[in-house]
Amino acid sequence: MTVKNELFLGDSKKELEKLPDNSIDLIFTSPPYADQRKNTYGGIHPDKYVEWFLPVSEQLLRVLKPTGTFVLNIKERVVKGERSTYVMELILEMKKQGWLWTEEYIWHKKNSYPGKWPNRFRDAWERLLQFNKEKKFNMYQEEVMVPMGDWAKTRLRKLSDTDKTRDESKVGSGFGKNISNWVGRDKAYPTNVLHLATECSNKKHSAAFPEGLPEWFIKLFTKEGDTVLDPFMGSGTTNIVASQMKRNTIGIEIVPEYYEMVKDQLQPEELYLLEPKPSYESDQPRRRISIR
Ligand SMILES: C[S@@+](CC[C@H](N)C(=O)[O-])C[C@H]1O[C@@H](n2cnc3c(N)ncnc32)[C@H](O)[C@@H]1O
Image (cartoon, rainbow, N blue to C red; front, side, top):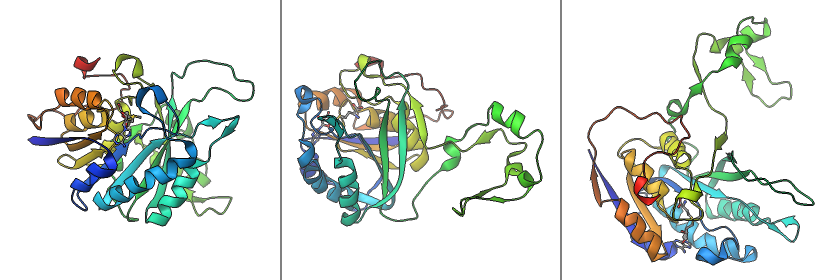
């Protein structure tokens, strides 16, 4: 099958205007964080972040299909000993803009380097905020199932009477569980915490994603032939992974050097032969040999 890769050089706020309404299945991106990595590509002051981002999210809302999902990787930094609140303010403003804030995933950075601070510990996680246009959206949960693990062997060996019926939540949350439903199964649904190591050191970008991160969300929210957009493309991890997963991709990047780097990696059209499905459980880096 053939997939298309469309790359734009410029400010995503303007470049997004070129895309048609309701045309994207998944937006997966990590915009520049407030005031961070100033030397690399310019930071936005935390006080100005929401104002800066809202015109972009307005365009994203327009281009996303009603069945689509927007996953925003972001983390507030510490300013003068306090966590900024701009991410929370952004969520509230995006809700006013029309977005539903559906879920929050955590990326646990398995290899965050050690350090000592007087009033906190090392930061080892980032947010992945999930936004949607509608309450019903495409989600392929079976695609990200994980092995049951040793837990099942011991926990499911001897079932109590409560385990054999639906055990309603004691705190009245309305959630209940019937443990016996899992007997004989070898796979379970994952949690909303993803454990992946960062991979920046080998890429020509200081804030590149580990490939497993977009890969997991692309599997969960799209199928082959769908379209994935990254409006802050950087080294193109989202686009390259999505293209290899037989999704059409669109990327926008403001720095010519990064744009050219991705252009060298991705053809406007890529032809993929029918191959067996790859396994996504590994968090080992693969592929992309040429930009490392
Ligand atoms: C956090 S990095 C993304 C890294 C990317 N996820 C990767 O794996 O390489 C954010 C990127 O957004 C780009 N950028 C910043 N402002 C932009 C804008 N207004 N329009 C488009 N790209 C922008 C930066 O140059 C940077 O490469």
